[in-house]
Length: 208
Image 1: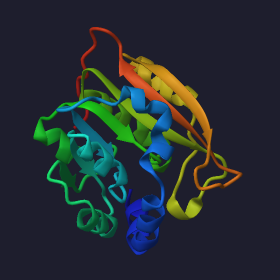
Image 2: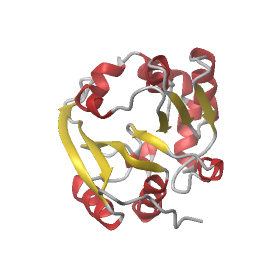
Image 3: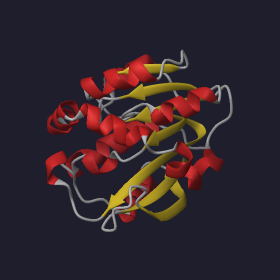
Image 4: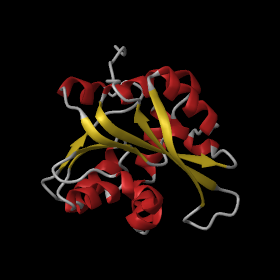
């Protein structure tokens, strides 16, 4: 995901300000019922400005925040100083740094990230996410629908694809909510998808 990191490094200040201008509750209000309670562990993949990580940390949760764009990560670390946030330089599809920590999570958030993952890498990426989830945990993935932004190297996404990946990994979609773009872009809309492991299923990593 080199191009992804480059553009977010080059325009780190602009993206940081944009993400911080949005309230966590406005972005994620439709899925808040699935968030874990203290002292749960949260994995925030593509954590960006740290806005979401800071919200979870303020609730007493420990957040492992993955952000591959170094300059954006620097802004986030400077702004959000909670000891409950652990910043990690890592990326999909392998999330090797997270994997080698041997930690499992109650909740995994991927906000505005999945469209940056090439289709050929999504099977590996999804399997890795499932492997990091505790039994009874949930994954929330937001899907960006509308014209592709080629500058930021995006790819088409769909709920159908997530359903297929979930089924192959012993999981299922437990909530799907469509919403308008919080930045007011008329051509863009979003789908928040919450995925949970099927009863009795425990994630097992097959990624190397």
